Amino acid sequence: MLYASMDRDERPGAAAADGYRFVESWWPFRGPAAEPAELESFCSGLDRAGVRLVALNLDAGDVAHGDRGLLSIPTHHERVVANLDSVAEILARTGCRTVNALYGNRAPAFDPEQQDRLALEQIVAVADRLGENGATVVVETLNSVDSPAFPLTDIGDSAAFVRRANELGRYRNVRLLLDTYHLAAMGVDPSHAVREYGALIGHVQFADFPGRGRPGTGRVDFAAVETQLTAIAYRGYIAFEFDPAVTSEQGEEGFA
Image 1 (cartoon, helix red, strand yellow):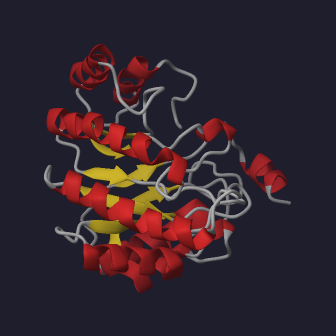
Image 2 (tube, rainbow, N blue to C red; image 1 turned 90 degrees about the horizontal axis):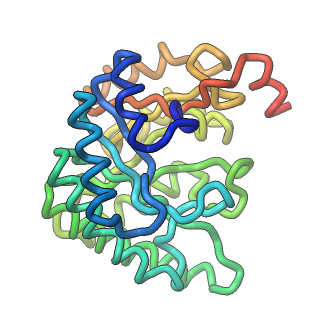
């Protein structure tokens, strides 16, 4: 998100120039399976820039046009399967060990219970497959304003899904992704969520609310969040996933 205007292979260098040593990425390819040349270019670009990839999204569909993951959508089962070999190769090449698996929107053509069963089956399959690479798979809670068809907008529901997946999986390697912006947009204090669900948190993303700007442009108390992360002895990464163009005024207008 910080370098969205740049070509994929330019972003690692831009991050390095801004002082970052660790980066994360949404799925960086158009299709679920990367071509060998694409994968080589992506991984070698990280190496040249001297930055380490620490988190990667699975193929989430056409996010710009409203897709929010594929796990729960029956017509995309083969696409999820096709994605995993490329993801596993990136993990092997980069040492990345955190993968974000977005749940998927409600699809009107399918029964919600059917979608929930499929999402559970697929998150377990993904976690078992990537667990062979030592990876943790994280599940993100989004907000219902930006993603009205997305079912996991309550972090309690997300936590229950994570616990059930771990009961069924081989590696118990499913965790929560805690995003301060999405929680705040749902009226949840992120520091309280850290305290309540700390044992399940596998990755953290910082963006302010309203507006999804950089910390300091909105009303999230990041000092309180950091205090709670210290209290639970969180040892993972904290990523910036904000829109760098948003100002305090724009944020307030966006959620007026």
